[in-house]
Image 1 (tube, rainbow, N blue to C red):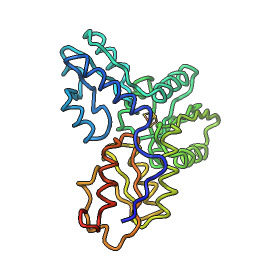
Image 2 (image 1 turned 180 degrees about the vertical axis):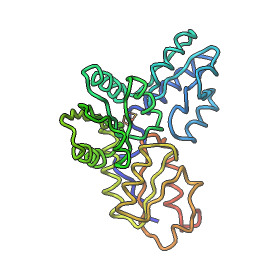
Image 3 (image 1 turned 90 degrees about the vertical axis):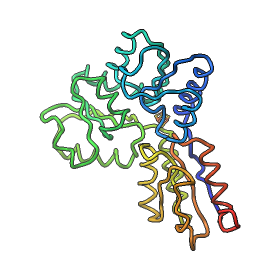
Amino acid sequence: MKVVIAEKCGFCHGVRDAINMAEKVLTQEKDVYSLGPIIHNRDEVERLAKAGLRTVDKVEEIESGTVIIRSHGAAPEQIAKLKEKGLNIVDATCGLVKRLQRIARQLEKDGYKVVIVGDENHPEMQAVVDCGKEIVVIANESDLHRLPKNSTLGVVCQTTESPDHFGKMLAAIARDNFSELKVVNTLCREAIKRQESAVRLCKQVDIMFVLGGLQSANTHRLAELCKKHNSETFHLENWNGLDKDLLIGKNVAGVTAGASTPEWVIDEFVKNLAAFGYGSG
Ligand code: SF4
């Protein structure tokens, strides 16, 4: 099987920094926690768990030690609780997520009703929402009824949103008769680069694989976009998740991976896929 890898895929600088920080802290400290999975990738979370990183959902589960704030960030209320408990905090929040939080706060301070285009269940969004008093998150046009009426809106988006979807939502909001809209672009260039190179590649291959955690928003976005251009697109966590029958009759496969997919998962997948049909698939 011929395998082509997307020009830009795998770890972004935000995720790489968080992993590097976790690895460093694990060599220095004994009780090390991550508030929520450090990244949305089960393989990597398991690897770090073996090195001693404990993942917890709530601050209440931590008695002492060091807590890593993942690249998605944490709600100000959670950080306040960690401080109250006297825990050592290592902040690995991505700079672009911090920027989004800062902008949302500033917009609200300036009198705008803040609207974020994104997934309200995603931890990045939950942390941003907690930065303001009444921030609204909308995913698609069916959520438009939740927009505050007769207001001036300050609109931003989840960092890993696609520019096309953000643009579509801005057009839909504008049609909804708001007299003033202030838009701040909070898209992440790293995520956009991965989307663009994935779409380019998926158009040239028989079958397209998008590797990454099933909870990973940016990986989902990649799979969604590729599916629009190549119906033979599959979102998998790793090589073990592949139904080999899918490869029958296919000659060229494309591979991309979300910003939270480690290189070793991509390498293993590509190596096995390339060997498929030659006796070791
Ligand atoms: S995808 Fe972008 S915003 Fe998210 S962690 Fe990576 S660099 Fe930061």
